[in-house]
Length: 158
Image (cartoon, rainbow, N blue to C red; front, side, top):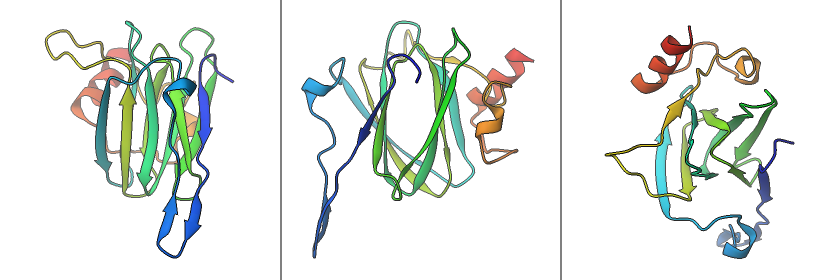
């Protein structure tokens, strides 16, 4: 397993109203959460791979749908992936020094809990192409929907 990466299985308690699950306790996380972001992605979107040199860590939680989280250890080349969401209630903690991202396997809402606040005047955002040979085989799509930033990461690595 990639150093520092943690998996947090969510235990769902079901009843006639639906279900409840404890997501995380501050005491179980290596760093405190400082910002929470929410995204919606349509099926076929790949977001990433991104990494943070100054140490922002991310916790990924798929709120609805299914996503495939992909992580690349930039030092060792080791790769990790796991499908999380409706069919696998799990949160994934990723040290930001590792390149990370996800593919929307279905339309999906994802919460990102991060350990640093985003500073638009000095962003700590770096990219690795989604099609890097160390991870390309982990995605289910061969032509993902990408942001301009993620397309640029591919051009820079070509």
